[in-house]
Image 1: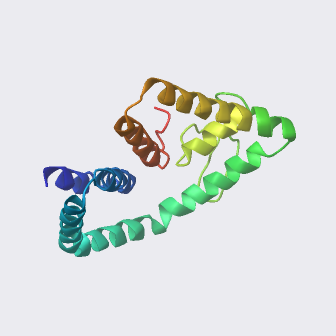
Image 2: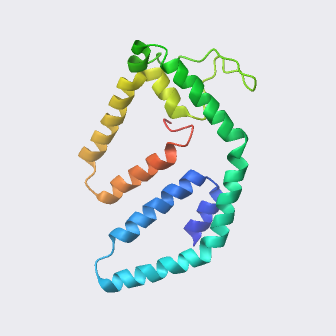
Length: 172
């Protein structure tokens, strides 16, 4: 209950989704007998029953608050960064270079010299290109697979990736 309360008050929707994903996978993975299945399904239904109305209200409010400004800004940034990335074959695969910025002014924002984007993973690809971005991801996944044998540690890492992919500070 304390954990759930902390998640709700933190207010980060992606963090809540990734924590929920972790607990669902952990919940299902720990079923060994029919008695465990019946007990876990009963607990799961009780939790859904108790939290469904507040959860639906919370999700609706979160989506409503992000509908206008944040989503428009993310779409605009994605388009600008994608256009900058696909300007030619060389840039697409090798990127624009670390520290490279956009020199674009739109009706709503000036992106000249800006290094902060709501879609930070796309900005990362914009700078490094597809080739080096995939290499970076591959190295991370390889190191996790090589160094962590416990499935819970890997599951926590996957949940972190689910959360951080939506966070502008993903590479911090």
